[in-house]
Length: 471
Ligand SMILES: [Zn+2]
Ligand SMILES: [Zn+2]
Image 1: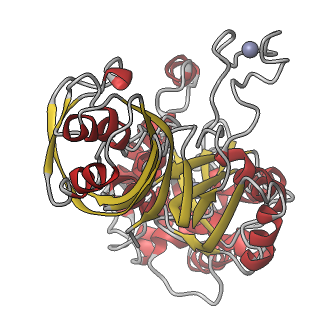
Image 2: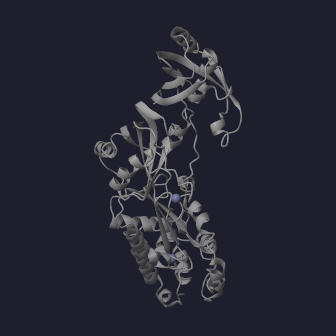
Image 3: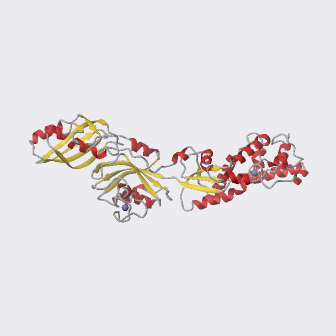
């Protein structure tokens, strides 16, 4: 079809979930986990219970970094990590070591402190910081074999813990102490960097997205896709742009007899001829294809080719020599599909490519039933140059398009060739022009048409896209 279509992205890419993800966004995803409520009800310790213990606790103690404040948080049982975090004192080291230093200082000021009854779990973090090493190990294990440069971290911590932590920290911690979630994320990042020094932690567009559930210590990783822009030429007819599932089995399961188990209506597609070598090169799981419109299966696409973006999913390799890749693709089916101008691109190029409407040049060849004078045909066809067509939705696409009349301009017409009853010409027209319908008129749905100006029935033989005037 000569009509450019705006295909829905059926892949349901969930980037928007992550695009602006801070830790809160990851939390809302994780919060829906079933069974969590019952778990926390069974759990006797909810972070507030320390309020009932120890008569020697001075509830009116000044906040940290006052020595009495530090003594107070030690009495309620904070771990070394949290002691350093809310203690408000500079120490030589940070984290557990920094906290241990503060504790030692406090003990030397007041030896009775070391004898206070300390609960097993830190009321601020429930000993979460003990798991940092374990969590980073799991992240690294899950991403084994995957190359990446940047990571975004999403952390879920149960709300009740966050609330009780906030209450204690605000009352007894030093002003400006970092909240639990930020500190936990920072601790994981620091540990990750210790193990893999060259990763960048980012807030958007990461190579990998990692979510950590602090309650279950579950780690989920999502390797983000990479995108390659290019232009393709389709040199042979009979190849669809994207994969077509088999009409009988719809590509489900093992396929069927009529598709010989492939699940495909057509064995080949532009998507796979280009995508398969890329998939192999980047050790990816799949690809998805976003073209700047599409041509009919029986239409070639020549000239400098049609712009597209290939989305490569779950790539274990995110970088490769594109010149080499281009020649791999071009040697895959050299008589059918070729690519040029490959470059890495950003996801947002997908919508740009899909939304761009540009003029196109075509060559079309058709047959007339009864002969007509040559000069008359040439004049009539040339007379359509500059004309604005009114095109009703063609019959052949009416099952998937709303009926409406579009106005589309023919910018120019050239090279009209008449060979007895076969006629061929080239034209440049506005995006969205139905070119086959311009010729045969679609039973009068396109006005004017070649059929109407030469007064003969026209049968389209073939159509080529000669150029897409974009990018
Ligand atoms: Zn703690
Ligand atoms: Zn089938």
